[in-house]
Length: 148
Image 1 (tube, rainbow, N blue to C red):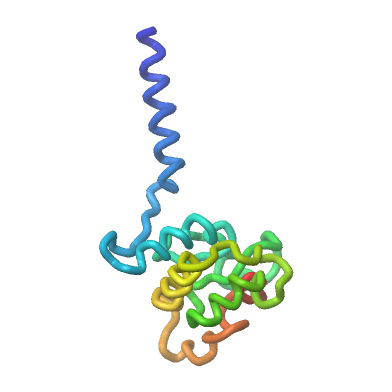
Image 2 (cartoon, rainbow, N blue to C red; image 1 turned 120 degrees about the vertical axis):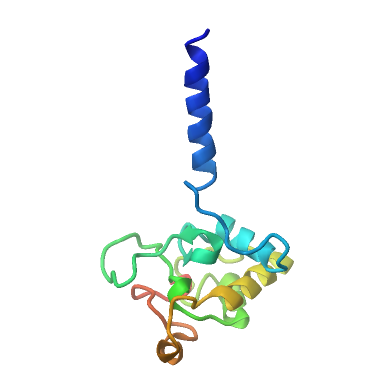
């Protein structure tokens, strides 16, 4: 039994690291009204989309056009979106309707995600790039649009 304790402690540490995303943390303050949207984005959208404020990295790396998974969605660190466009994409399975699951969040949850994305998307673009990257289909999405 004494040998088992260090093994259990090691396993518990590994599980804790995996559960926290290897140290990645949501950057939105706990008392920020947009925190719930960040949490939901992290839980429901991070497998396909990147947005650093939500500790998510599901997009293709910036500049990678080919390769990667078919489901790699846009990198919202390098793209601006309006809440209206985000809600449209959520309700309709992206702009093409081909890959993103429709209604992955609904109701007030969808509105929380949309408000969060509108506020935090585009953090890695300069003012010069702003006009070229805003709106559906803009930005460095690796050739994809929101939800592809």
